[in-house]
Image 1 (cartoon, helix red, strand yellow):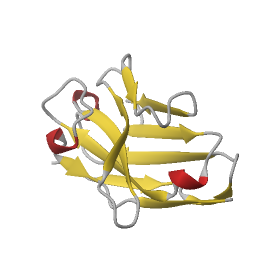
Image 2 (cartoon, rainbow, N blue to C red):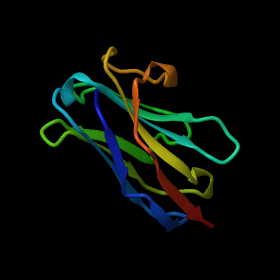
Image 3 (cartoon, helix red, strand yellow):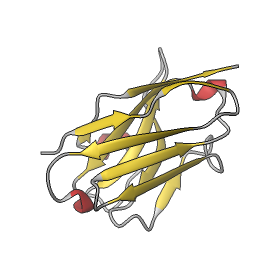
Length: 124
């Protein structure tokens, strides 16, 4: 069992930046693939970025490529999402997730544990 707590959301103007953090409780953080998803009002929860257990491999949704960077620090049980050049359409609740079975995955249904989410609002 792992518990995930996100932080770092907030209100930012278009073109600005935010860094989200997600801290995992418990041991064996390095054995979990990690991902970030977002969900806008009235929409499905969508994939944003994923990172492999070691941090070597990363994957991104097309909509955020070149603007967002996912990283992890296994010594701190933390995964990050650096978001630059933010757009109003990035406005959503952002969730981090952990998968205990896969080395890395972009599939929402594969993830076993979810945080409570942090709100990101980008004003135009």
